[in-house]
Image (cartoon, rainbow, N blue to C red):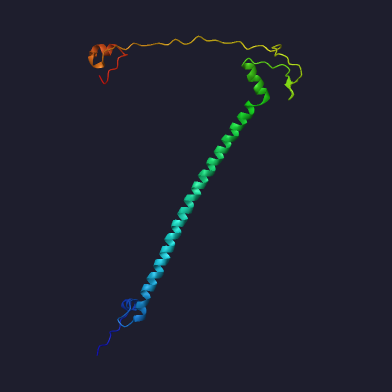
Length: 169
């Protein structure tokens, strides 16, 4: 008679965790439990990957929004410059600086060839020409280079002539 010894304490608890030789129902649960654990682990890893991809996209979006703001500010500054240069007062001042004077009364041609209005020439009355400032050209200094190759120049002569390349001497 083979009777199974009765286990006590820790051994009894361990024996209940592991299936015995005659328990088929518990052996069929093991693959199911492993499948559930693997699915949960895979889902958790998938969520972590998705979360990190979303946060990376958020950082890129933030950087692009900063770049857009900077470029918009630069565009507005450039538009202000254009507006200040194209203002009538600025154009008149620049024209005077260039020596231009206002034109006379214009005449208009109609489609039939007749002239309407009396043209007049531009007069510089009341407008002073800016003085012309002419500067002489700056002198150009040329240095002479000996026609011999650097290898033919003695070391003492090359040291005394700073315009001669020494090539490591």
